Amino acid sequence: MQLILMDETTPPIQETEAEDTVARYTTALQLVFYEGQIAWQMNVLFVGLNIGIGTILQNKLYIFSSFDPLTIFMSIIGLVVNLFWLGTFMRNNKYYEFRMAQARNAEPNGFRLVDAYGLDFSKGKIASIPGQPVYKMNWIERKSRNKNAILVAIACFIIGFAALLILSFVPNLRKETVIDQNRTIIHSNR
Image (cartoon, rainbow, N blue to C red; front, side, top):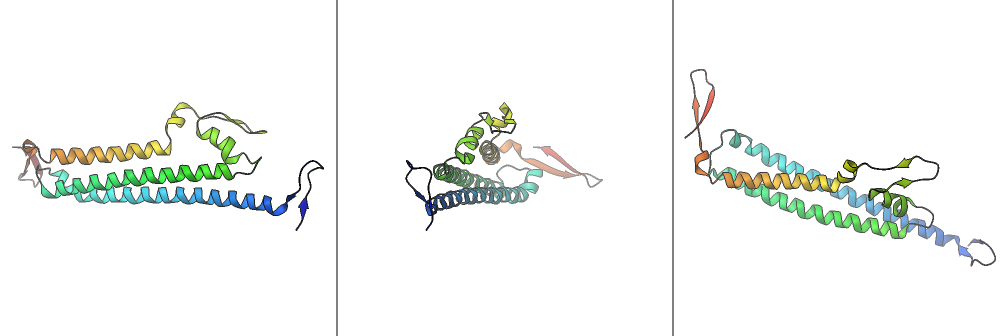
């Protein structure tokens, strides 16, 4: 085992301790990457489910009739799916934040990748790296975090499915389909 000596007043540090520190940091970063991948895979899954529900509802919405059992059922399914999306997104986000905290804690002294520069920049502060230009986000970049964008998308889907469910119970929205001599579909409210 090789010893690295700093000076006479510094106790010797075994090389394996430094390697262990870097290995812990590398593992922590891999866990951050893993949590990020899982979060995006779940987002893709839920977007796909919403597209599937929307595809099923497409024809029903073209000729909208209130109190249509399929529209009501699919609206409820859409609400449930999006509430699960919200829950899993928030849970995955907490895991990601936890893994980032672990990575910041495991970061070896002097690295300043996750804990210093990275943390400051993610919070919208100016990041100044020696020998590099100054990095700064404008107000829209600070507000347009991935987390905010996903939450807005989930909220839009929930509001859309809730509105569709409510409108399904309004009787005066019923449309009557009429086909004229040119085989054109004409919609008229009753």
